[in-house]
Image (cartoon, rainbow, N blue to C red):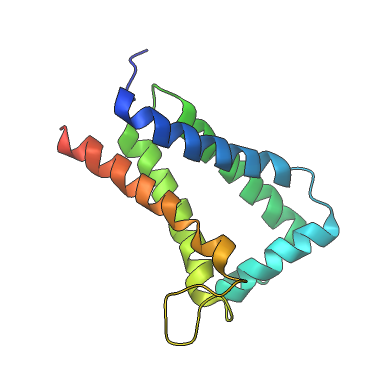
Length: 139
């Protein structure tokens, strides 16, 4: 098995991978109230999810986060693949920030206090895009 992760990518892949893996593991034991809260927030940004059962939604989200975290941490996974998965996930998180009312100051991209936790996830988007560009540049 060939190691695809280059040494300069290790810090970004490690930090993002551990954070996302931890988040996914934490959601595995979500109770009904927690599942409804996560689902409700997602539906606020993505109304097509409203018919999804909250517990099933959180279980799928948990599994997705665990897979993305593992892709980032596995040195044999090409950075293009890991970066694409991270970019897609982070794009969804950024969509939450941009679409949910009250997350941003009126007429601005600046976060409100409520939006600050979601706005911080933009770093994941930057890492994902950087990993993809780095891999594409080397081809």
